[in-house]
Every structure is written in structure tokens, then in C-alpha cells.
Image (cartoon, rainbow, N blue to C red; front, top):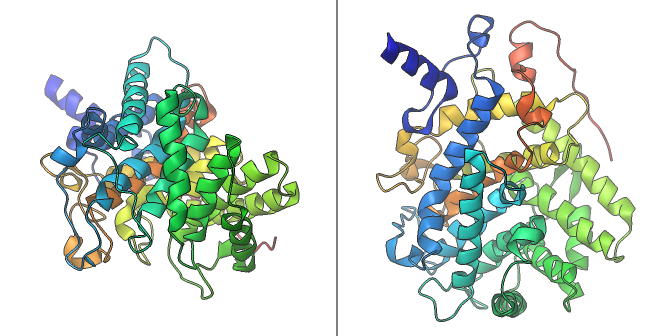
Length: 419
């Protein structure tokens, strides 16, 4: 009896060690859905499982020694050292809000404090030329480091009080140096222009000299690529994929936020970009099926739930579209995570595999896919920057749009919006 009760509870919570049953959350089992506190515990445990191999090694200068790197079968032979910066930069971009929460006496707080210290220590290694974990910063031919330097900059912009201010002056100087040196890399004419703009915007935020030509044309170009109803094209031609989620909406909004704060841009630009992100996020919430799945289309499907960055960023900001409650986002994404992060989503050493569910690298990886790339999935964990008392975490189980619709319940209708 005790074993049966334990298994029932573990199944409801969806513990990482033996992840959840793949079931439809119908009326009959809604009563058995996880409690709000269980959802948060699951998210924390899952993020800790994802982060641990990267941070436990890099904080000691041992990431490049111990990281087990897999490459796509169609790998394009770029310098394999890019994997280490991808893993670290993408990971901390999603963790930054969580490590910003104040410490308290809870067990979770101890985990967050561990993450915070490990990220700070890893930053010191990643920018120290004498460290075994000094990151590869590329050159005019090897452009990939521009991408992941931008995710490091995004983390620093998100949590300067804990990820920038406490750093020693030497580490700060090294970061500034690398962020300026990486100007040698010219972005491709697509979402990459926002990577350059994000790095420069971080420099702007700390009152360093900037290269405005890496910010202003990026903003203008992205706005020209707006095609309507919350969608931007990724370059001159529209691409139907998740890059509005991985990059375009969140980074454009962050770049504009800094530039408006520093008096370089009109707030109306920011307001428009934010409304467009809200519209796009309304689609994202509707992507999630009653069963906790979502449409897999376009490239980079191995990035998993990182695609939902706009939706969770709005949850973090308390700015979700009016017809979407925080709790329904929590419940919907929890359902997705429990279907996605099965034990075989991780290698036996604990690294993320190249796939969507488990390791499917032979079918859906891209020429640039490697183990480090997978850590962009951490972007879905931004709401861990909200305290447990916030309604995102504290409100009871709430059905999301598709669960309401396919249960025969009233749900908000959808219609195009033009900003």
C-alpha cells in the first residue's frame, strides 16, 4: 500500500527520475492533477537535472574536460569548441531570473544559491584565457560564438545584481574585452542581427562605449520584417518555424528596453514590439494540445521547450495576454515538460540528447546541432524567477485553451491583430 501511494504521488508530481505518465488531462483525472507546489518542485528538479552537468563542471574549470559532446550526423564541420559556449550561454539565459530571487530558508533557495555561485564561478573561467574552460570566441570565419555570447549577454541583462555586479573587476574587464572583440564577427542577415545588438545593448547598460551600427540597423531591419499578426520573417523571406520564439521577440524587446532606458530610442518602438510579442505568445499558448504536445515544425526542433520563451517571459513580467491566466501557462507547460523530458532525454552521464523526445538525432538534427545547442531549452524556465506565492505558482490547476476547447467548455475566440 505504501509503495502504491508513493508511486501515485510521484506520478502526479512527475519527478525527473521517473517522469510522468503520458495522459490526457480529462475531467476524470483533473482532480488528480499536481498541486501548484508540486509543479514548482518539478520545474526546479528538472532544471537542476538539466543544469548540473554543465555548471558542476564549468564552475571547477572542467567542462571542456568532461562534457560528452554529440554532433549531428550532418554536422557541417565548424569548430567543435563552439559546443561549450553554447551549453553555458544558453543555459544561464534561462536560469538568470531564478538566481535573482532573494535567499530564504527553503530547500529550493539552497539550490538557487548553488546555481548562482556556480554561474559566477563559471563566468570567471569562461573569460579567463588561463582557464581550461576559457571559451572559444571565434573569428571572422567562425561566426557561431556571436550567437552564444549574446545569450551570455542576455543573462547579464536579466540579472545584473547577481551575475554582473558581484564579479571581480578583472572578470568584468575580460567580459567587456571579449564582447568588444567579438565585433569582428559580422552577423548573417537574419535573426543573427539581434545577437550583435544584444551584446552591444549589454555594453550600453553598463555605460561602455558601443558600436551603434550593430544596434540601430538591427532594430530597423527587424521592424521591416514584421509580416503581421505577431509574426516577423527571419530575413527577407518568411520562415515558418519557432525562431520568433527562440530569438526574435525576446531579444528585440530586450534590446529596445535598454535603448529606451538610455534615451537612444523612442518608447513607442518598445511598446509596439511588446504588443507584438504578446500576440505571438497567444498563439504559443494555443499550440499546446490537451495531451501536452505542441506542433513540431521548422528547423531546430531539438531546442525543445525553449521555443516558448515569449510566453514565459510575459508570465515573468506579469504581462500575459488578457485571456491567458498565469496558472494555465504553468499547467500547460508542465504537461509538455512531463511528456518531453523522459529518462532517455538524457544520456547516462546526464547530458541532454539530440532530439525532441529522447535521442532522435538521425531524423531531426540540423547541420549545427550538438550537445551544447540543446541547452537553449532552459529558456522555458524563466517563471522560476517568480516567488512561490505568485499566482503563476500558487493558483490551482487551470485548463489551458485547447484543453477547454476539446473538453467542450467555453474558451476565448481568436482573431487577427494588427500592430
